[in-house]
Amino acid sequence: MKVNFDLKGKVAVITGGGGILCSEMARGLASWGVQVAVLDIKEGLASKVAEEIKQSGGKAISVKADVLDKNSLVEARSKVLEEYGKVDILINGAGGNRKEATTSEEQSFFDLPEDAIQWVFNLNFLGSVLASQVFGEAMVENQSGSIINISSMAALRPLTKTIAYSAAKAAVTNFTQWLAVHLNHSYSKNLRVNAIAPGFLLTEQNRYLLIDEKTGKETERGRKIKEHTPMGRYGEPEELIGAIIWLCSEAASFVNGVIIPIDGGFSAYSGV
Ligand SMILES: NC(=O)c1ccc[n+]([C@@H]2O[C@H](COP(=O)([O-])OP(=O)(O)OC[C@H]3O[C@@H](n4cnc5c(N)ncnc54)[C@H](O)[C@@H]3O)[C@@H](O)[C@H]2O)c1
Image 1 (cartoon, protein in one colour):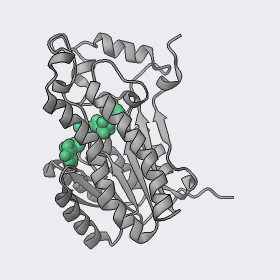
Image 2: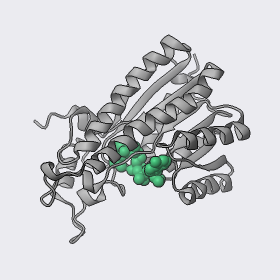
Image 3: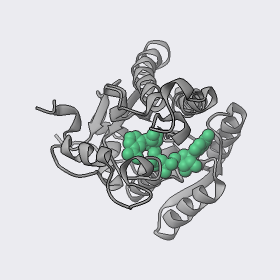
């Protein structure tokens, strides 16, 4: 039997597609023949990624969209359908953390501003729900599709300091399982919803926690992360792509409602 990883001609919508990890996913999918729609609240970032893809022979469009504004997502869906006629894949990549929603020596738990906690929770959780409503509807029309959410190691057991981010990613994990069941029960047995849970990659959203801004040296937290990652290093964005290709393809046709850790063994290690 030949395992089918073929994605040629599929259409993928990637929210937060202008960011570090999701631009890599956009490039990765495009290199497998996927027609990509790069959505981002920052139009410039999205169009840069789409241009790069086109220049290397792939198919891509960029669309400015805010995952917290349903009207903006509905408009984005119209543009994607106008260009490509369908949606096969949705990657809910828009997400992240904010310093103000993180405890530190300067900022106690008791003083964390409510609006910062709400911001992080909304971006990661509500942003995934709204985009799944809008693009999931287009998949239901086609009676086929694959949604991939981005959870995190912070979802399995909360990380110190990142209270809102950990809670929001736990909600993303929970939502992944919920939506997988709901779409199958209510709409089609041919819809799948899964998530990846990346371990630690050094990116703009966590740099302030892993590298000391003043000295440029690794923080105690950065050191601990590597110590608790059996492979002894941070991951690279391109190391997420294999799982994305697999989850989007027919090769994963019976994989539904799961959260795949891509973490160098972090979640397997008890620390002893
Ligand atoms: N970096 C890591 O180590 C790591 C680990 C686990 C999970 N993740 C998750 O992976 C995803 C991507 O992370 P990243 O490190 O590439 O972050 P990033 O900040 O580079 O990318 C996020 C993108 O989302 C966009 N965005 C922000 N708000 C938006 C909105 N309201 N609507 C549309 N787009 C919006 C940003 O403009 C940005 O381009 C996030 O969900 C993040 O939480 C990252």
